[in-house]
Length: 152
Image 1 (tube, rainbow, N blue to C red):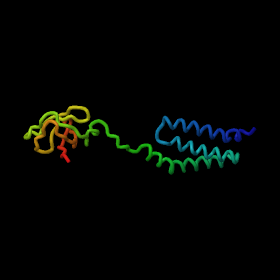
Image 2 (image 1 turned 180 degrees about the vertical axis):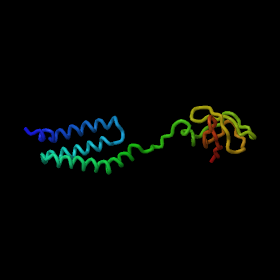
Image 3 (image 1 turned 120 degrees about the vertical axis):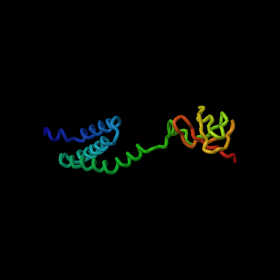
């Protein structure tokens, strides 16, 4: 049996493709995925013809095609920012209630927001009283910068 025919059979290409697809799970970036697509193309070419040159050209062509078409789409879809805010960023925009009266001159008091009691500074000189609604504008260190919420 010719060694060349043994090495370039369709099931070898398919097996390599499966190994590359599994390895892609552990290595992000979709490079191995593109190589796996190339192996699938070479496997189809090997099923049609026993010519190694055509199989290698199919492998190269399908790999490049996947690299320049599928990979950008997958990268955009998988690595997009899904607007999940965490830590301090999650507090911006949250509403809460005043738990300690604000001093009109200092504009400092305490508010309950996101389940915790926070030191707060108001953006206006309005004297906020216990129970007033506030909205968090931003966070500076451990102090919430808040504004009063007008009742509708």
